[in-house]
Amino acid sequence: MTNQLTISVAAGKGGTGKTLFATSLAVALNKQWPGAVQLLDCDVEEPNADILLHPTFTAQEPVYIKVPEVDKSVCIYCGKCAEACQFAAIAVIREAVLTFPELCAGCGSCSYVCPVDAITEVNRQVGVVDTGKTPEGIQFVQGRVNVGDQRATPCTKAVREHLAANLINILDAPPGTACPMQETIEDTDYCVLVTEPTPFGLENLKESIATCKRMAVPYGVVINRDGIGDEGVAQYCQQEGVEILLRIPQQREVAEAYSRGETLAHGFDEWVGPLQQLYEHISSVTVH
Ligand code: SF4
Ligand code: SF4
Image 1: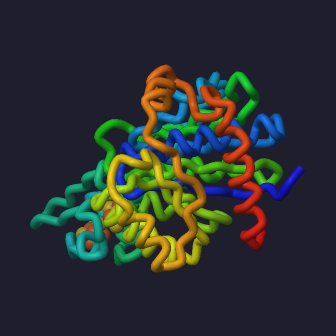
Image 2: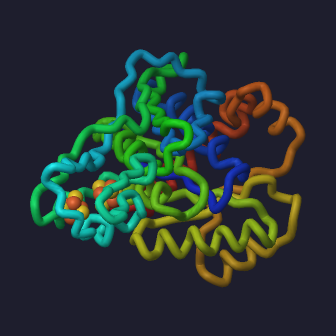
Image 3: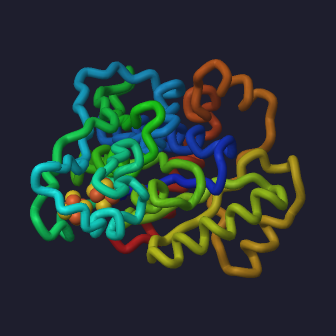
C-alpha cells in the first residue's frame, strides 16, 4: 500500500468535470487497493458524486449549528448583538430583537458580546451527512445542506469529520473559491484543479490557483474537454510553472458514459492506468 493521501478536487465553476475526475480517481485507485479509498462529497449544496458511484447509504447524521435565542425578559435592547453579527442574522429594532436563523453562521459572537447574558444558543439542524459504501467497496460520505439554507460550511465541516487516516481520501469540493471550497481544501495534501481550456476556464483557474497559494495547498491542473477551446490554459500553466497532471480529451464516448452514470475508470479501461499513475506522481511530489 502507498501513502494514504488526502486529495481535494476543485474547479472554478460547476460543470467542468470536477466530479467526473474525483469519482474516476476513486474508482481507479480502488481497483489498485480495494477497500482503501474514501470519496467525500463536500459539494453540499448540490452533491452528485452518488450518481456516478451508486453508493448504498447505511447511516445518516444531522448537522446542527448553534443559533441565538433571546430572552426578552433579560434583554436591554442595547444592539450590541446586531453590531457584532457579520451576517445580518440578528437585528434590534427599538424594543424587539429579530433573529434570522437561516442566515446565521452559528459563530456565537452575539452571545459573547451580550452584556446581560440574554442569549442562549440552541441547536438548529442545517443539513445531514450520509455515509455508506459503493458496490465496489469505496467508502462514501455525502453532505447535504437543507434547501434554502444559506450556510454550507457547517455541512462541509461535518463531512470532513469523516476523513480517515487509514484510507486514501478524495474530497469533491464545491465549485468556486468561496468559504465552502476553502473549508474543503484546507490542510489537504494536494488539490487537483479541474478546468476547461477556454478563456473563461482560465480566469476561474487563476482564482483557484490564487486560493491554493494563499492557503499553502500544493496543486496541479487537469484539463477536461481538451480540444474544445484554445491553448490559453496550457500557455498560462507553462509560464507560471503550474503542472498539468492530465488532459482528458473531448470525446463523445466520455459524455455518453457520464450520462449513463459511469466514471472514466468504469467505462474506459485505458484511463485506469493514467489515473493510478497520477496518484503515484502526486505521492512522489507531496510531503506527507
Ligand atoms: S446584546 Fe443582549 S441585551 Fe443587547 S440587544 Fe442583544 S440580546 Fe439584547
Ligand atoms: S451566532 Fe453569529 S451569525 Fe448567528 S446571529 Fe449570532 S453573531 Fe450572527
